[in-house]
Amino acid sequence: MQLRAGLLAALVPALVSAEPVVYRIDPLHSFVHFEVLHFGTSTLRGRFGQIDGHVELDRSAASGWASLRIPTAGVDTGLPAFDARLRQADLLASELYPTASFVASRFSFNGPDVAALSGVLTLRGTSQALELRALRFGCHSHPQLQREVCGGDFEGELLRAGFGASFGMPFVANRVRLVVQVEGIRE
Amino acid sequence: MKTLLAASTLALTLALPAHAATYAIDPTHTFVLYEISHFGTSTNRGRFDRKEGTVQFDREAKTGKVEVSFDLNAISTGVAPLDKHLQSADFFDVAKHPSARFVGDKFVFNGDKVAEVVGTLTMLGKSAPVTLKATNFNCYVNPMLKREVCGGDFETTIKRSQWGMNWGLNMGVADDVRLLIQVEAVKQ
Image 1 (cartoon, chains in turn brown, orange):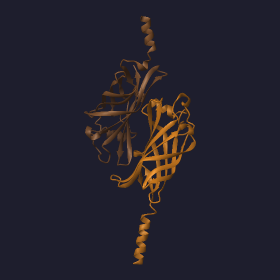
Image 2 (image 1 turned 30 degrees about the horizontal axis):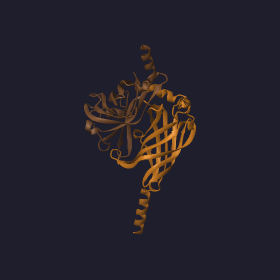
Image 3 (image 1 turned 90 degrees about the horizontal axis):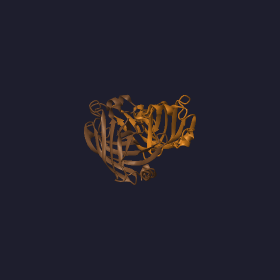
Image 4 (image 1 turned 90 degrees about the vertical axis):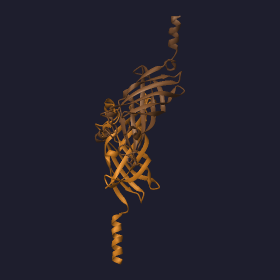
């Protein structure tokens, strides 16, 4: 009987495991880029990393849970002077709030793939609903780690004034697009 | 009267020399971001931070020329060991080829907005044609600079193997690289 259970466990591939599976965020392949329109002309971009956190997926129950920490104090636009301006009180207020968080508890799936997740983004001490939609999602077996890696690209939108980060409007738009690369390594 | 008219015509002519103008690339609002698929799962992104260049732009004649070069020592992915690998002979080989250069000499207009810039991208000592498609284009008077600024967002997808950048192709690292270009240039 024990042998049979062992055989069964060996036969059930990891990818269709029924239990919730926990993935730890891979900080080398997880970044948030923001995009905001400058004078209605060109798109300013900046990067937040390294992100840490974890994601739990239960494909059989079509449910999931994610908790991510995003260090806003490390914002990187390629211009140190602009980064310093972004960290000031009327934008990211990074001295008071060095980290943003995103906690998502509603997941939707397209087959085995995550299609969207929604939850609460806390930025600058203010919490607002945020939905991230998958542009692509996939899993593969990582050849070096010998573990399953799942991840994809997600996008979402926020209005920065809602978080009190309103400096420079309307020359720099209120609407901010988030482009999120995320990969998680199975625990 | 005739002299006055001739003088004003001359003044007008001098003020509007066929509308051609030189614009200097604003390095604080000009960046190239690349995107490359990571094993078909997520998208790796990196940015080129140091650049310089000029644009000749004639909105009336609908012509233009842009020349921009990027210092490849200033690649920024957010992962320091990856920046080093990208600078090595496997990718950009910055010791031998420290910069990449784009010269765009054909501006395609849609109305009074630039819709495409056709030109040549040189890196790793090789040149190949590239067409940048505009997703935004606009001109405005910058209230701080008190000058006209023109710019937009452009994108293109290139195959890195065209420049001989072949590392990892046989291991499933993608050949297609999408370039997202923010550019603004200040009228001189």
